[in-house]
Image (tube, rainbow, N blue to C red; front, side, top):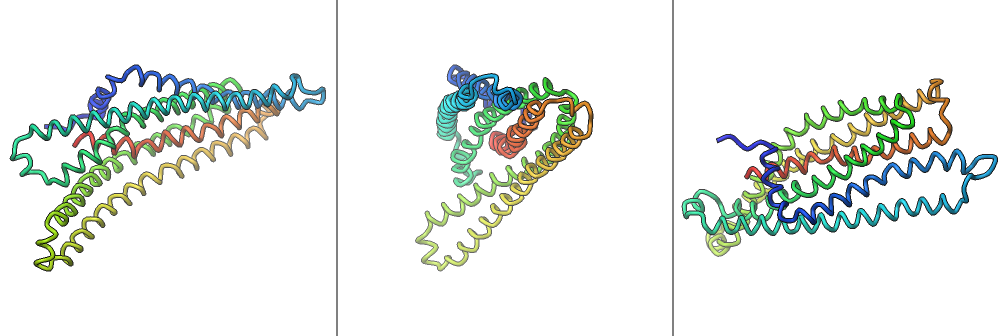
Length: 315
């Protein structure tokens, strides 16, 4: 029997969120509203520099500019808190429901199932795998919704300011997508390895604790210590290989983004199309582009969480 596809796994995971659809919807609405405030700050930079520091004097009282800055971040902070609270509430309920369902399933399984599976692997599934499944169902969706909306809003503002320079910004998209796709497969394999290695480690630890009298009577301390160390080293190996793959994504993304910024700065200083922009427009453009880096970074760093969650759901 073939393994279920990623879309099928996510469909099953979301079925556990469905009973809490109203609370989940409030969390999503909060995320969308908070992300929608992202373009407001760079949008305010333009009138602030063009009119706030003009020789004729500011076009509006300085207190209005100061109050607007505070208001933007205050509203964003409140919306972020609301969405984070409701999403964590849903996440904790999903973990509770998954663990209850797994425990109920374990109670009804036949005896030969327990003969074929170690107690360590079963404990790992209930403790470790459930947490990763919950992360895939909630944390991934949080970042996906929040940062995708932020990227769309900031790109919309960039297009409004200068669509030609924005096209240069968009050129970093395909290389980033290729990098994420190339690393995804390795992350999935490492996530499966971590699952199995964690189960083995728990199994060795449980056996040693339960049979500590036998170990002491027959002088098996050195053997058990060696067996535990070997298992722990195997788990560490999988974790390090996963971290290497995950850590490559961020520097590659930053180098690509820095290249795009460098090209834009060069064109803005050389090209007549760019030099027609006001100081406020150019500063607003660069601010929005710098703000794009954070949500793009968050989206590219989702891969380890997605692959861990999918590998856990497969088990």
